[in-house]
Image (cartoon, rainbow over all chains, first blue to last red; front, top):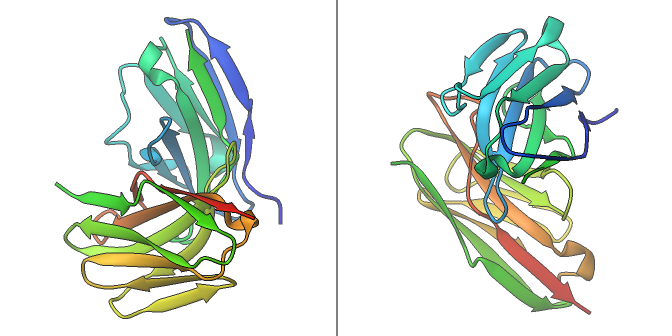
Length: 112
Length: 111
């Protein structure tokens, strides 16, 4: 079974630029999550999708972050404009039953 | 405020030297407690889920236990390949699926 795929793996941008990350979950997994992991910390949930719908986006900075999940499969997370404090690893995860979550390799974002 | 605290922050072990990692939580309405392993440059890898006090799960040299206030991850006779950061997370009954992570324990096992 293929795992969660993410791209790009690394991205360097200047502050105030925009960036987008892509995630393809494990086949058949209805729930998809985006997490932000700052160096030395545990991941923090940004947004949770159940199929096409948003279940929880309470910790998503909506003035600059947006996310969508097309046709209940792939998802994109966008930051516009980026700030220095957005430098982190962005992790995508998926689950079949909202308990065991399986994570992708992450995208390391550096904002200069 | 709901909190998940892991200790120690870092642990250095000799190969074969057993030890335990602690995850304490101050949350109400715990649904489940999760352990993940994270290698440098990779996403967290699922290890265990525990749902009720007294529950135990094992996988190779790892054993996870749960009480009403904390969980322990026991590493028995560790090998260098057990070196990783071990993350603990909880989900609450009213926010099913929303993992709240601790900061992790970085474990280094030397030959």
